[in-house]
Image (cartoon, rainbow, N blue to C red; front, side, top):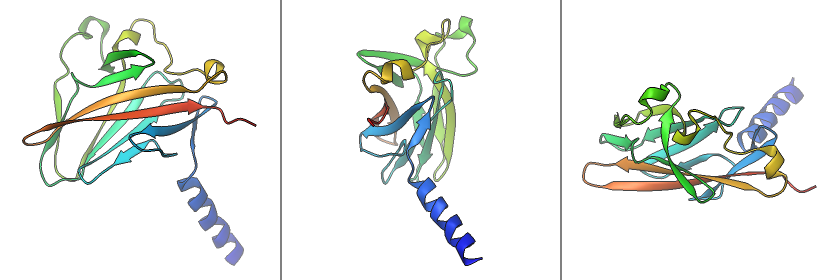
Length: 168
């Protein structure tokens, strides 16, 4: 019984610190902090990313840690792939409405929101954000500019995720 409990406790601890693996590649945050998790947190917000298994969409979670209402301006949110920055669309966007403004999402104090996003250019011909075939040659970085509006100011958080394959 003690061995079982110890094994479960150990596996939970190892899983909590394990690197994220998706589509045959490992993922880690390299900016604004280096972390094996895909999340950034400060006193005001927590921003985390989850890639779907085909790498087309990314689930973005923004948690408001303040006591005031904040908002995400989706029209200023960008995905940066290589040297190209691209506006985003949501997973339920219809091609005919891809250029319609997305507006802002307000986040009440101590709550969070989720949105599935992809690069607007990918709506007609979806392209994966990264591919194991190319990551084998060199790591790939995908950046996100997350514009958060507070009561009297805006802060743009730049988060960069790196897809890589460890050297053997």
